[in-house]
Length: 196
Image (cartoon, rainbow, N blue to C red; front, side, top):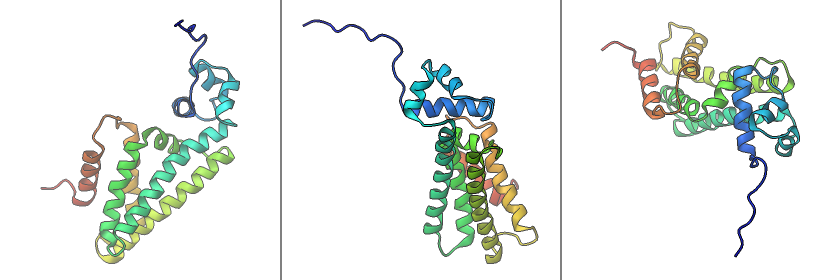
């Protein structure tokens, strides 16, 4: 039996690797400042190798931010299905689920929070993000109406503060942190406060 000759050149990369590197570059350099050539250089392949996996730079962005938005939308659908009758529990679980989604999809969520709306793909992502924000704000209003959340604060302000806290996790959370423990801590802080 003869040994086959070793493969020449760099090994190929799959679509997941292309998306991972594109996400890192878009987040670090900005979407506008990153080219398909940058992604190819980072992977050590030609631009045409990238186009073997994806048709355009915009497609890369759409896939990544779509991952974050799909995961969050699915989590909110699950929360609504589990707690259809109790708005306060639904809101609490939505905050907790948002943290879990953020931790599980940290690179994609981080990129989503940094898009500016300069391209059609970014504008589409921002439109979808606004829809999610509106769902979350509606959950807050329902919890206020139910009496589960204090009524002396504007529900929109409560929503922005709650989910602003969740979104700020992208600045310091690490992938090796326990997502469930973090979600429990954020939810406890948000709904029970710091007082003993």
